[in-house]
Image (cartoon, rainbow, N blue to C red; front, side, top):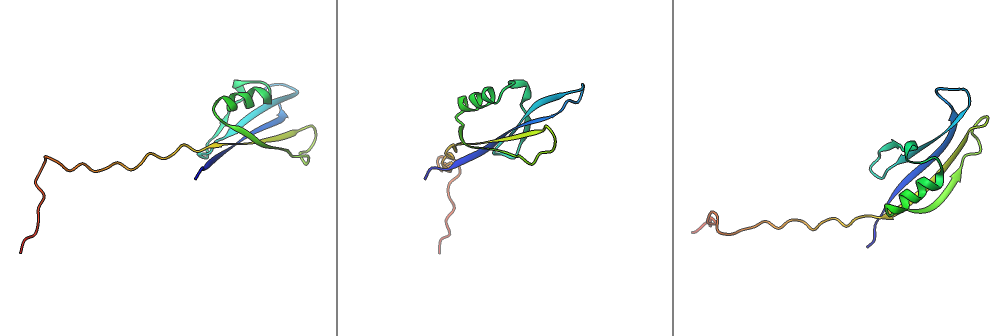
Length: 105
């Protein structure tokens, strides 16, 4: 059965930390629970979505939060991709090492 893993790309417009004005920040929430600021990888949502697509991610939904105060914007891009199949369990090797012990009666 095909299994999926999910990720979230969040685009946020917020007050700039080093100047008067606004900045756009992108944060990637990975399937392993990681949270990474990916702003340096591109300045548009399309740049980030294309990069994610190159890694096998598919956009499945987009939402925005209209309740953000002032001029803030919050966009969420929901992505999924097939989960890599787990490798089969390793077989234990029995062979020419020590002889097997048996209980005799």
